[in-house]
Structures are given as C-alpha cells and as structure tokens.
Image 1 (cartoon, rainbow, N blue to C red):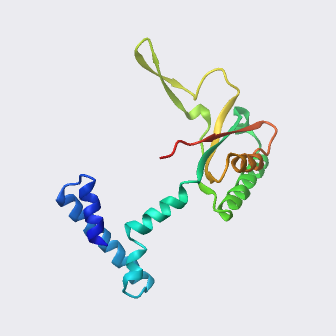
Image 2 (cartoon, helix red, strand yellow):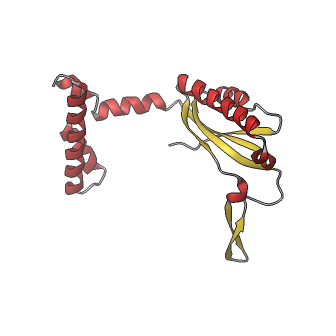
Image 3 (tube, helix red, strand yellow):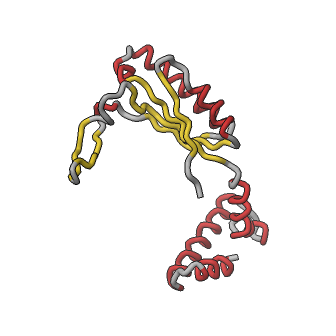
Amino acid sequence: MIREYYRHLQTAGKPSKVALIACTRKLIVILSAIVQRGTPWGRASWYRFSLKAQRATVAREVNVMRFALTVLASERSWELPKAEVDKIVAEHVKLVSDLKAAGKLINVYRLRPGREAKTIRVRNGRRVIEDGPFTGTEEAVGAFYLIQSDSHDEAMAWADNLAIFDWESIEVRRLWTD
C-alpha cells in the first residue's frame, strides 16, 4: 500500500524526496491509528488507509452538494435586548444540533456586527479602505452555515427552518466544488 502511494505521488510529479517523506508520514499516521484503536495488524487494517479506500470515499461524496446558507439580518438586530438575542441564539443552536444529527452540517460561523467590518474597494485604480460592510443597505450578513445536501430542495428546506424571525432572510447558494 505504501508502495502504491509512493508511485501515485511520483506519477503526480512529486520529487522522490518529497514522496518518501509523505510515505513516511502516512506510515506513522497509520501505525498510530492501529495502536490507538487496538486494531490487529493485517491487510484489513491497511486497506482503510489505502488509495483505493480513499477513492471509494470520494466516489460516494460526488453526488453530495454543498451549500452556503447566509443569514441576512437588519443591522438593528445587534441592538436587541439580551433576552431576544438569547432566543435567537437558542433557535440557531437547535438548528445546528439538528443539522449535526442529520450529518448535514459542515460548519457554522456567526459574524461580528457590520460596524466592525472594513471593506476594500478599488476607486480610480487605487485601493480604498472603508468602514462597514457596504453602504446604503438595511441588511448585513450575520452568520453563514456550510451544509451538505443531496439536493437543492433539501438545502431550501433547511434554510426554511433557519428563517425564524420576520426581519431575517436566508440566501441559499450552492458552492463550486471539484
């Protein structure tokens, strides 16, 4: 298996020294995993780390689509009373829990207020740094979720669970993937 990996790296144009170091690292990771899990030494334990197994995993993921669910909210939402903010956070925590349980969550990020943002723009060939995310808008990005989904409709259903307040909107956008 290590020989197969070494040949794969050489075919990909890696110098021999780099390929050898990568193989050594891979061997250390495999042996560490075998020791930590108490897996008996044998061909079966090697297969899980082989290129063939990795390719099979990638093949299963080909049909999975990835989406960004972007939460757009009024800038005034940053000035809400603590009790209301706690309610909003609790709703998001519940959704994160549901996404995790369904195996759909990749990650989620809550953003700081737009007033703390800086924007770089090019004006007359010069870079200009401006305060805030953008000018002349009522909404700002408050958070975004990265999810995996089997279809656009499924991603829309998750977004529908996310749109919990009348002053929020959710943008659903598919990611470019390899």
